[in-house]
Image (spheres, rainbow, N blue to C red):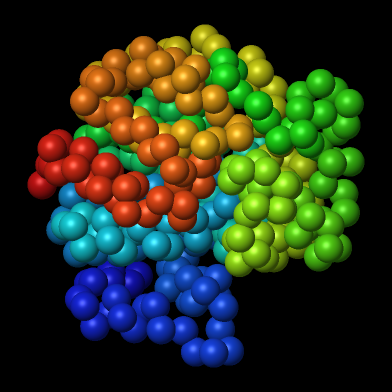
Length: 318
């Protein structure tokens, strides 16, 4: 296990890749790995082990790579930052057993990861469909959470415009197995990454090539894992009303909402009030970032870090 003490020298070294390395490869070299429930989970562990802990969860089609610019800065503000690659994503294992992708199983796995790192209580930061995992964590262990920040995620179907491929799966027009059958082909994987990333920016062809290349590379060979994940996630997403309400009702601690307003997936004027009502978020803890879209961690890292650390500092627990 590598606990990275983020001195100025280390921050400099971590960002100085050789010319032969891509940022994605540099990021992967910093990941630790844990055996959780028989599966390998890759994760980033930054900051001093005695600092208050924060776990950052990603969504689709991303990984811990989404947080590469902001995680070191959050750690430098005085936090131990844990950023896992959820099973089936990034550098974590890609089993094709659907049961391991059930929302409750994914949540239990993240709690077990915290256990393996000696972390009893932590703040939880959720993004995209990582929110599904996070809400289940809330329901399973609300006493372990010091605070929750919802960042371009959701807690229901209102205001959501899924990616076209996901809409087809939700409508029963295509099965997850058929949708991801060709991900062994790098060109198909990159095209799929382009589709997802563009909707989170501002339209066709707008996502930076570095982002598309990174996640497109991650998708190569992930067809079975993505089929299994979506085979579990789509029904849970469409039918999870009562279970979700019960999970959210289990927690009454501090919450924040940090939202990029140029989000092609989640309409902010619908999703933000819905989240605020369900989480009981104070108006002072809602931050709208007007010049960012869905992937605000890379689109507006300064505003993201400022809002998140201000919230965490207000609710600091040593």
